Length: 488
Ligand code: V55
Ligand code: FE
Image (cartoon, rainbow, N blue to C red; front, side, top):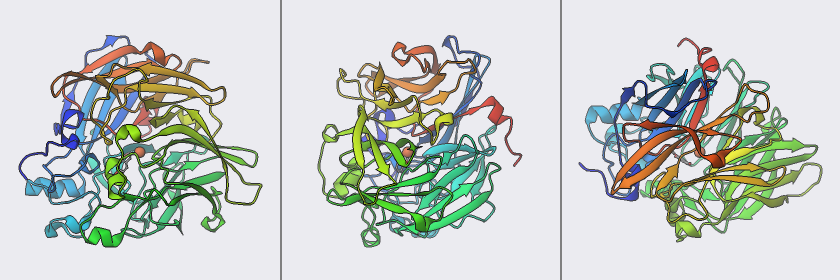
């Protein structure tokens, strides 16, 4: 194929941009609080070549690492492709060689056995290193200064898992990174590798266990004492893949399961709780202990949020027919049985962002993307095809919900949170906001938002003078953290 398809995955905010660039000193409207100093890294899927198959999806796009570098009120912008093995092979061939999303049986035979991952989901900072991650392969290490790709990251050969999640969790007190890989033992395997890297970035634990079925395990959570693995019924099947079919199909009649184990324990201590049928959550806000109780707050929907995963399972619903809520599940580890409590704690939405210091602890507030209740139809774009047009701040302790609502022709990406050095101030959020300015025309800005008063909107806006493609996740790395980067 010589041209990009004209589906939602390649038009609107999802139009391929494919431009590597470096822009010094972006225009700043308003004043950036001087305490904001560091890098906002963003993962942007952007296909370098037209796909082999016209029904290709956003999730297959080659990963680009993008950075807003902020210091003394100045902002520099950079974006570069991650030099994955896949990107380099296709770049040399000047065309796509890898076929459908997570189906190697659809690839050009010339690339059989080569690394398929596109490293397009989350920038991760741990122990002085920056990684670009995608759950179907290992992470790629990126130089945080030059944005050059250093190479695939396997803990100096120590990691046995074939995959590395896009959602590791770093404990703020110990500096350890807790992570996992699913399909760890190969395509469609039930193996999950549960791992810990210490504060120096050394792999100190890797244990494998089997999930109840081979599911898409996008995220997990830790508390101060537990690791929590939710398994939702979006399943893979090797025969379906061999027949050229999709990796994932959502099964509305299948139960979900939640595995909880001591976080420093053995995987054979995993206790399984039986969850509702057909539900799905890609992202968990947080989990925390309260005596024998474990609370898990998650962006829950009553079916899979991705149309292509629903349709492969024969579920035909329009995006607005997917219902959900920010939901708290509470597990009582002192009582026997497989059941748990459920209650809604916030409006529907996704892409939650927690203060780093609250990871695995009771928390006062968190943020996520949602829909303006008064708004018209959302802008097409992003991985699920409909962009978010509101930002929510919740305080689960008292039920308070605040919103930054945008006009229907606008979209907000996942924010990052920056702590404030000033006592009692809740810090700042950074988020990219896009506006549709005409047919297939968009402007993008970086917004600086007071985390204590999101309804007020931006305190500073930084227009980006080039087109941007929708991001997936981001990460804030402070100047202090950047200065601790490891020599490569
Ligand atoms: C997600 C994103 C992915 C993926 C699987 O947000 C799930 C969910 C950007 O890639 O491959
Ligand atoms: Fe994610």
